[in-house]
Image (cartoon, rainbow, N blue to C red; front, side, top):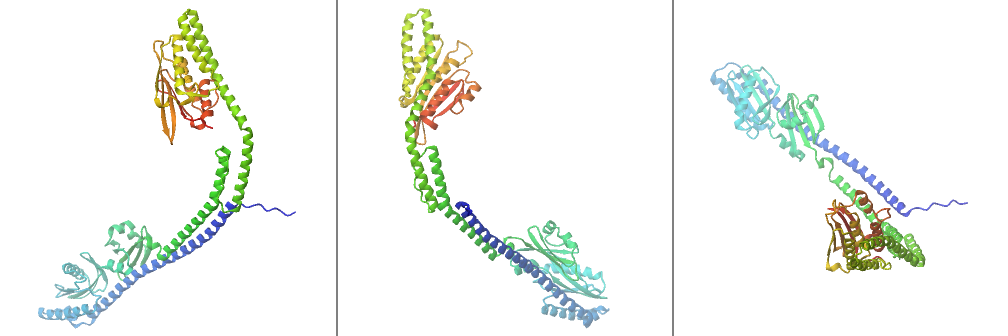
Length: 566
């Protein structure tokens, strides 16, 4: 026997196909993006490192040229040799003049040297010439004093030194031979602007000489650059915080040049990667559009059918509207459901009148639960007046009692005008005052607009009688005051009657409040209030509302619409 295949769920299958296709595309895009971004960042690091390496190479080439020129003068220049000995002042001047001209020409021909400083006649007489584009004239004098002090304390040497002059950092090399010394300098001014121009992005340049930070001291402290470079030999590269740092040491010196490039969005990806991300977002948009199509053409009709079934179940509709579904399966479901509802409506019509009769019987039963209570109160009142042999009062009370009983015996009436209920309550208060002698005062505040409002029979009487029977005042000399008010409320285009009965007693007990504030239901106590609630539920459904509270006495509020439910 052939095995029957299990049916697939259309919703689940379509969404699964859509998500699998999108996930495959998304993974491809993410892998490609990851690879391109990685390559871009590596190329960025290489280009940034090459810029610094190229600049360092230029500095070292300039140092090599300066060192060679200085050595040529030291070794082969006759004027330098003559100045090293002891000569007359005139001879020293002539040799110094000739040497100065030679140095000027070298500085003009070789841009590597930014200044020459000559000290002769036992180093007592200085002469210098500087490139004012590189070294400011006002700093040249200070630089002269620094170099003179330096050569005065050293012998023959060609070691490079780092010299500070004003805001500039310079590299200096010197040669001394007995009574004469010559120094050449190469300034590092404008290093930040030069590197920034080559990279075409903002940077910070930190200079360190022999462990001493010369520039950007705050940034260097933040990065702890001194300790980081202390453990490196000639080069260093690392990301520190929001910067990527590249550093190199200039040969023959302890001077480090560290370039800090800020790490921003374009350090992570370029236009190509951004375009790829846009493609990814477009793919996401396409998936959303696909999902929107499925939602409108499948999920929405399916949800509409489910909502229709729920409305049928709750009795809100009796016919199944036709759905505009494009899937054949959903149309078949809609047609089948419509046929089922039609059959159910036929069955409901057969039992509808039976249900109506049951509701009427329940209404009569709830009303009859209230009537014995009032009959007994009436008989007790007549018995008390008969014992006093007060025939005049008896006649008056018998009349009022007959009015009271006639109203109670109208079992066929479910609702009455509000004013008729108020008249009945006034008659009831009259009976209570003359029957018991108790001081009871009932005030009525009924808006003219609601006098004819249809209300459930005994809806006011029940709460007033509850106050007469249970309101505790603490002393028999204190009169019982009952206030009955009725007004109109409007909400969502409908009008409601707001009926409130309040007294000046001690109010409801906590247990009674807990019971009567529950949803409509039975109870062993407070039968009158519970019956009113059940009757209102039958007449108005969910539109009827109740509020029971204590506010200077018991407060009972009933809010009902103007029409009963069908």
